[in-house]
Image 1 (tube, rainbow, N blue to C red):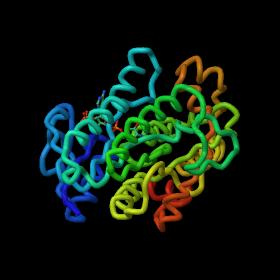
Image 2: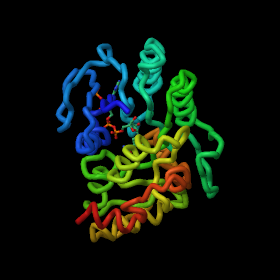
Image 3: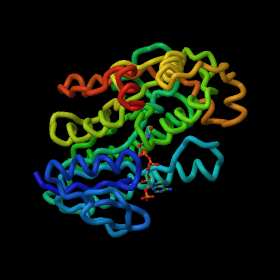
Length: 296
Ligand SMILES: NC(=O)c1ccc[n+]([C@@H]2O[C@H](COP(=O)([O-])OP(=O)(O)OC[C@H]3O[C@@H](n4cnc5c(N)ncnc54)[C@H](OP(=O)(O)O)[C@@H]3O)[C@@H](O)[C@H]2O)c1
């Protein structure tokens, strides 16, 4: 196996910490960034997307994507699409242009549990069908673009990630701010399932997938024990020593945040069947334990 890994989004929250893990395993990491520079420690070289050479690398890891935790205007939807589907299409075109023997061994592409839409209380393994709504369609197009690499003979993984909890991550920092102010409350009924994962486990799962050649296709990047929004709210408040504030009504969320508000009310009880079956061990399988680690 080659020892070079190319990471799109190495300047980001998840990718930045992944670099160190891979470098420690002896990989040479090339970071792709629109500016052609970044600060993640362990990147041996930064390149702009139009200068990327994927020849003979062990893996391409694609974690690019404009943040979706904002109002979904038409202009932003174009950016969400271009930074996910567009970037993935460019990667696959670069792979297609290489002779078969020089293609990367693995494309590990980002995706999200938004693929499942609103699944209610159903337990969602990777076999569950695509759901409905804007995010499900975006994830589906993202995954279909990545699938192009599989047809070129490259092992392809579609990592359907849940809410990533980790210091420096947008979701976790926003939650902590709200809860430390004592104004964190459940969203809507609070009955919706919120698949979460500790960022250390997500990055470790990526390294695991790189090594485990039997793993391919859709992989849920979520902890084995998803929580309802109400339980997550209670546990977060407890972890920071505050009371749970009033619930935020669903209509207010939709009014304030539009489509993204609707997403926060959708339920995805996803479980990481493929990772567990392949023998991946979570360091932080329960939310209580993960929050203890993150708020220590
Ligand atoms: N964090 C989560 O909770 C979570 C949950 C589910 C899925 N995901 C997915 O996982 C991936 C990484 O998440 P993250 O939290 O690490 O995100 P992040 O910190 O916001 O980093 C995303 C990366 O995407 C690149 N990017 C941003 N806007 C772009 C645009 N318009 N065009 C091209 N590239 C753009 C940036 O690279 P440059 O600026 O260097 O070019 C940045 O490094 C994303 O695709 C995200 O959707 C994250």
